[in-house]
Image (cartoon, rainbow, N blue to C red; front, side):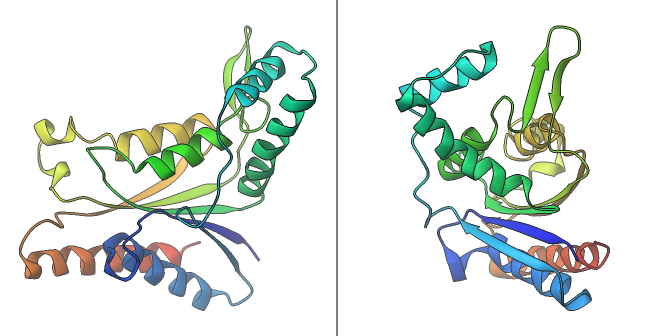
Amino acid sequence: MSKILYIEVSPRKDRSASIEVAQSFLKAYQDENTVNQTETLDLWELKLPEFNGDTINAKYRVMHGEDPNSEEIAAWEAITKYADQFKAADHYLISTPMWNFSIPYKLKHYIDIISQPGLTWAFSPEEGYQGLVTGKSATLILARGGEYSSSDELAAMDFQKSYLEMILGFIGITEIKTILIEPTLIDPETKTQAILSAIEQAVAHAKLL
């Protein structure tokens, strides 16, 4: 038995290409082994803690081996809850649209919450940065209006794929499968073909997990 943490980012729900492909992935994953577990985080339903002054101060106290005060302890416990939930999964499925060449602010907020010293990464002068979320894998389902993989010029504008692959690798996840849905801002027939192609890839990959 394994557990997937599905992080759903699009607010468009039944009109979202990334969610449509992700749901096909999850169905294939569950059909392959009915004892597999799925936990869904809809980032538009979550009330994530603010990364405020107490949280930042607690972060630096952790990094410097200092004792936080009571307000900082409470702030850090709220962060730890989400990091522990994240680390409890075996595989991560993130479905997201591209916004302004990058990721929606809801996803960036979530990443800023869980990417913390002592929780998902560590640093030492001798060894540098080390990811703590190891032995796990991730699938990224990325919808984008343009065909950013079609040329070096467009790829240079893609901070959605590059950022997500980088930050997951930074915290220790090196086995990453990325499935692109592109282009979506085009005629309906071409968009449908892009979605169907992504679904085919997603289903095939889900059966391998």
